[in-house]
Length: 204
Length: 222
Image (cartoon, rainbow over all chains, first blue to last red; front, side, top):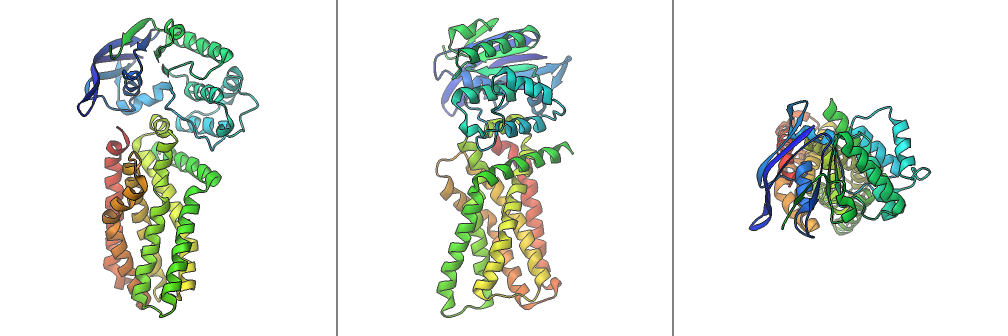
């Protein structure tokens, strides 16, 4: 996989959030997006994921040297962010099954069980998400984001709400991801920054 | 095939959510029953012509739909799950899944509301098949229109008021054709007597569904 971004900018009416953001990443590379609160880190992550359109600039994804259509990119990415909530009326398992179905994943119950085990949520699969603490919800978001083994993993505030044990798990995931796939994180946490081979500053 | 399957999964997810919260069912059913009771008390004293009763039936159906069908997208925005859905499915499959949910919900509730209306208002029709076709096509039009309007207003702050205000002009052709078709069904058993109303409702449904599928990408993103 490969991402190429050039001259990305976003404005809401007269208000410009950021402009002229450009970078290129290939498998085995990682990027940390940094910047003060309100600088547009989350907006940039959402643009890169295809959730919102940029006001200007070019963003392309390539797989095996071929350009990937914008609507097809969702199959290749995983995203964890504070604005990306799960369905709290449903159980953890119902949420995960919805993700599996929507991503055409079948016969992966072993991997799912391993992920629940890895993120220490085994035994709580049938509980409604509304009974989960914020840290448990964050762990469940990771399970949902990693189900399809994404080629590009976007993490917005990757360690938010997590305890020490949860943070260690997330660091393992980040280390694994950047080894042979693409990792993009948006953070202000100095400990998280070590996972970004490159850094770009937004709103400075 | 992929599109239909994903639309089905979204429908299934929404049904599970609705089963656990019963928000839309309760809103629509309570509104319909309260309106029916209020109308039957006020009309019951002097009686009303079948024409007026036909209009009242569609008014009850329209405002009942307004009270609950917007929830399908408002819930996604308020619970911050809209972005999750955007990541998982194409806009077309999202619209179709939500439309099917609204249609099924509305039709199921009509199975309660319409017989109740017939009983309470002492209403009857000669053309049962004509009435059923008008009701089904009207439900498709109302549900499709309500679904796309719900998506438009879901990001606004005054969602409830905006939904009804926006929906009324867009859904007016359904209400007018529904009332007219029901009036014909009261007196005529021949289905061809309501041919123009049936054509109107069918054409409206096709146009609103096609238009919604084409425009939903712009409504849903950004």
